[in-house]
Length: 379
Image: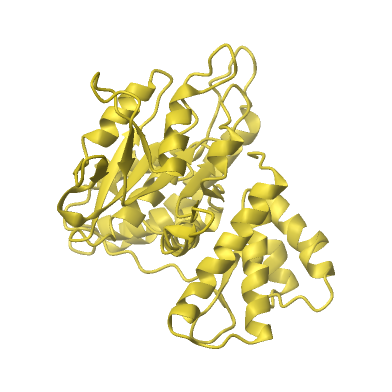
């Protein structure tokens, strides 16, 4: 799990609480104590336990939330909690009913031309993350005018390999209004230098005034920073590429590099950020706390077997159509999915990584490759 100081978690809780209350505030709607408590519990949960894995989220609900007397929690049966590992994370506060409502995954519509590697299929994790990303992005740019404090408008997706962090960000961006919002993806690596990052941003902006730059045509720009933690850590423990990233987000600009203007701050407006990174540890870098506080952090947990079955069931359902296959073949779809997942789980449990076989890592991407092969045959 990515560590985060308590002050960052408190700030994230207050920002998310402000974000979910914002629609009521914009409509001048009164909020009673009961509704405020629902929003407070929702914000508290995601800010303090949003970086937990599934088992730790269950423990957080059992050991903390359920022991708070009178806490307004969703009604979850013992059977669903045990079998489906259902927790408060599977619910949100519905705006119309002003009560808890379970997340519902929208039905996926297969594209006319099905390219497996480019498929973006919504899941429970993706719609939960997109909801938070949308709410956070709607916060005002300026939080406090007198203190010149900027609002928290950025989201960081953290998770292991194959947890669809990049796919969720792309799905979120695919819903932008192209007349109002632009999208720029920057892939970080250990070789990414500050000048590379600055040039990538400068290629997407134009001059508005002498020292003020904005995205073209009066639009906003969402910058997606993939593999945020990858830049090299120098001998002093710094990631200099992340320092200029933090400066841009925090101070809304960086300095001119041209000789005649060097040392003058180039102000950049109308930007907001998304980011994704692996969990730190095991040779993977963390990011500085000064950069963490610029984001609302969400952990993308590995999908459950039910979610995996729903994802690939939708894909195979689109491929195994009655025009091409007999009913006997079509009915094999469910067995094929169950058998593939069972073999994948068994391999992951028996073939554990060792110093000599460190490549024995069977994550969701290995499973995706198997289904990708099935799709090629089916097509």
